[in-house]
Image (cartoon, rainbow, N blue to C red; front, side, top):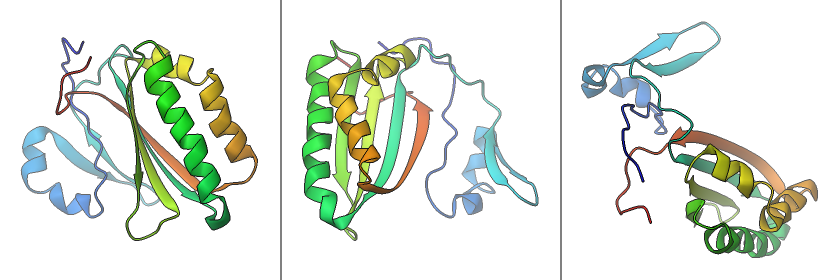
Length: 155
């Protein structure tokens, strides 16, 4: 369960978010730091501990001739995560980009960091690592975030 969260997620995933920082974001303690080589958004709120639910937003682009293989592998990983990990995986959604059928987003939520670590040791996750090793992934990026609240109750 999600009790005692005294932190705020400070990840802005929307392009052009820096324009937002002069407005309502200032009241949330958000500020933009600029360095000649790096621009990042920071948060003055305390970050939560590793016992918080861990959310992953994974963006991948798959080689066009490997999309069918990817869909089989990621379905097994998603179902395995939800049904075989004894409650460690709270959510595992797979989304397809409407403008590019080779781009996907996986939204995963784990009970905590240790549940995510256990996930990486499972046979269904191994299918995903083998798919990546086979060269099916063109590009991948991931964002790790602490879960704050969700639109439905956590089981």
